[in-house]
Length: 447
Ligand SMILES: C[S@@+](CC[C@H](N)C(=O)[O-])C[C@H]1O[C@@H](n2cnc3c(N)ncnc32)[C@H](O)[C@@H]1O
Ligand code: SF4
Image (cartoon, rainbow, N blue to C red):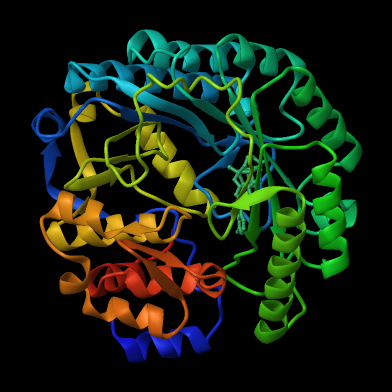
């Protein structure tokens, strides 16, 4: 809840309270009764410059830390049923959207490159031919893992104008990776990164995790140094989040201290190497963007704007007033049941949203504030005024306390996090949740 006392007490607690990559979190979604008819919903939405997202919930292994919606699958038959279902869903969605255009496209997971190559090609064709996304003109990002990013799959992606490849490496220290039940060798990681570089993708993103079992600040810096040898345009530094501390062999306080020290040292190293910090987790090399699909005339999708069309079982879709998806689970049994239900979905059922969260005016404002404040662009009060016809400080008077607590500074009309504020992004994010969203999240029973 937004009170100053609450913020003070939250700041005194762990800096690692909630990873806020969107708002509201999927655990605040509930069954929608009655189900929402999508043609009516999308008719009210601006359908130009949409973000198309396709979710592939398959992986070669299940890493011990991962809480994403994904399952281990080497079953080609099942993966092909999944892709066929996605094709059916795309056809219905295209009819729902009518005259729509896409400004961005991403294939995420899971691990999209776990799909056999012919299915990966079908996914690209679904985006282009069924959905009408102009792949040569818009930024396209695909998530890959070291073992599955084979030469033929990377070539396929490049030939379909994919301009950003994002790869999970987590650590360059074999023992740290193995302790998370992730099968991966550093030799193989380096071979894959070399292959990606040679193919000339304009943007390479590498994910690393700090706070892993057995990791020290020194070994963490070694992983970052190893990353820098490949000169990625983007690097994500993720603090490890786990539901239970079992196996880490540390107290919570020790774990927080290590994560904070890793964050600070890692950040300094990247800044000294010419990276800029976009958010608590994201760092970008200054000259990034050359050779990417974005031209000055390309339509621009702003991250605060809604208008995301998600296809696939784990994907979310966003309109201004409704966020929806399939049901969500993390455990193997729950995921498998949801996937089975997805591939059995009747065509007509794809015309409805069955599970989601309705955003009233206040939630829409919170979402806007959260997404802007937690990134380097900051909260532009003039843009907020233009969008919502009201004043940030009138809507949320407690905001001035962010400045009083040295978490943010105000420069003209822009409210921006300070260095301390960025470090505490996961606390500020959680503080900005509405009472209703917090209650729903607390009441969610994880399957
Ligand atoms: C979809 S995966 C990336 C692609 C691919 N599946 C892989 O692992 O190589 C997204 C990223 O989220 C991060 N991640 C997943 N679970 C996490 C957790 N519990 N704590 C911190 N980071 C996590 C990892 O860095 C991972 O690379
Ligand atoms: S981290 Fe990547 S490879 Fe590992 S289980 Fe999660 S999505 Fe799959």
